[in-house]
Image (cartoon, rainbow, N blue to C red; front, side, top):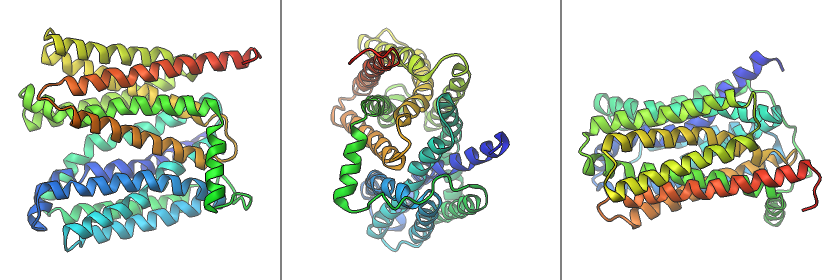
Amino acid sequence: MDRKRKNTVLIVLGSLSAIAPFSVDMYLPGFPSIARDLRTDVSLVGLTLTSYFIGLSMGQLVFGPVLDRYGRKRPLIVGLLVYIFAAVGCAFSPSIHYLIGLRFFLAIGCCVGMVGSSSIIRDLFSGREVAKAMSVMMTIFGVAPIIAPTIGGLIVTALGWRFIFGVLASIGVFVLIAIKQVLPETKKADPSVSLRPRNVMLGYLKVFREHQFVIYVLAGAASSGGLFSYIAGSPFVYINLFGFTATQFGWIFGVNALATVVGSQVTRGLLRKYDSARILPVVTALQSATGILLLTGNFLGFLPKIAFVGLMVLFLFCFGLINPNTAALALQPFTKNVGSASAIMGSTMMVSGALASGLVSYLHNQTAVPMTLMTALCPSVACILTTIGQRRMRMHHQNIPK
């Protein structure tokens, strides 16, 4: 496959993986309208997010072995068909309970794209090229939080919240066509991969025996915990504590998302000189230092709100550097069971994000401390793990007994 074709495939894979965040961020502005239309309150509408994230976590673990058993394209097509029908169902939901259930199936359908895109990249690339490819996909993935809320707000204002799901269904159809026309089958069906529950569990246990995989998956999950802590805590901190308007907060949120995209692009330049194992300890140390400065500066009161916003931009810029490299190193040991490994990686990050954001909510005390505590703690854990991972890889290359 030539370079131009590979770039086209990466664009399709990025679009495929971006469906999941689009399906969250686009309908958020419609929460009040959904509550009024379905005669319920916003707290019950919030359960549509809960059911979605449950489906996203569970579905990845289901689709991982399926992608190893049946190849890549067929499960992707089936998953997108489930997504499209679920999106249409959401658009016609007669009650909040139907919407909660259909959001679960919406997640089941789109999560195959998250697992499948990582698996296909590992099929097509090796070495530093994996991290470079991940950074391209991350760029497209990162555009979703920037544009989706604005698009969703315009649709709600002009047409109503139900049309949001019509647009999501249309996106699913577009990506489905692109997959059928552009995406090659990068892995043939493997009948030796069993889908019996016992064998699936044994396959997952086999993946966990790879120490490099465990170290870098946990490092990536820890860094993701910092990101989700910011997402959970930033509305209260920026609007209630700092006094920014909702519009200003939207701009700040967009700039932070852009910082993540820029970070993923800087990764590509760094990989021309350094490998991922050398980049990660430095970047996670920088993110950890930024998080600690946010915590201490806010706690002691010497950090102006503009400086706080600037440091948070740096924090998320570092995340854009960390995510592609941890993913590349986690998947590096695998030529088989790549789908299962990708599923564990994605599911672990979702669980970490849910725990971190849950702690921010649980520790809420009318200050910025809960959010900044997690933005200091999570990258510090990632820094320790990536340092351990770098040392283990250095010992392996030097053939020093462990």
